[in-house]
Length: 454
Image (cartoon, rainbow, N blue to C red):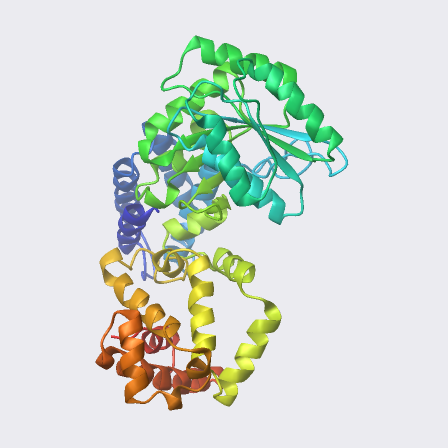
């Protein structure tokens, strides 16, 4: 996400970076380059103008021109402006930041209405949100009130089963308001604290849909009204959000396919055009591929500063602290096994794509191309490890010629590839011991290369 924008804005900073003093012309050149980058990213024209004007006004002040490091000062101004355009600094009705969900406590029922056009990912996002709330300790439930789209009810029911939450549905139902009332009653009786309602979707905006949604809103009195929009549609998504807000009234937006949107125009325009915060983004097809949107972290990614906080949070979700400490001791004593290696590979896969993780590391954001990552090689590596017995993974020294031949057959690779992986493992284990003890000559990328066979 934001790949092209990151590249363009990073290039724009060359006009001011590393200079002991900067002139108004340096600022004009940098801002002009940033303006073109934003326009190419499909950011709303009115948003671009506001961004450019406010940046120039602040950057041409004496504070920047006479700063000890004016280049860094200018970058900070751009960062702060991006944060303000991406997010919401106001407080919501519950006293929490408006960027967060404004839900009641666990002793009362909170209601979330999910809205959007067909194909936007509304039903899938409803299930993803339910899974996220479950991990946060809430007890959510889904209600199938999209009675227009064929198979929408069944799709939500299946997804609910996948994420492990209850789903209220009525086969053959015609009235979504009646279904909602029954779902609300069921939720209260079963001590559910969050009811997520998948509402009617259409292929395009029309009055019947808006009227139905308006009646449902009046009946439900929801705590959150979230529009689900496709990030790939750019400014169309922003226009849809604006229309929904004018007709129904939104509290926030969810952008799906965010991982595929390399331009980012919708995310950068939404808050300014609609006045509503972007609350969540869909970053993949799996139920876990759903994240809260943090304006400050997004601004850091856009400027190539990475997003270490999100990377750490992802790691904490899949790696147990006690296991991590035990692994560290094994590394220090050089007793790391191939079983440990396989477990770590599988844990990293749960964190998302390798490219997305590398882009969160400062200095690597926007520098990693998809073709630079040999996914087939990584799959081959996992296949070889999986084809070994537990005894072999615990002690790779017992893997002789006959065992290597069997492992190669089981993994669909060659004996030479199996031998190469074993050598790589020996090298990686030795290198990681040096890294753990602070040895010179070992850095992050060397460790990565030691782990990925070539």
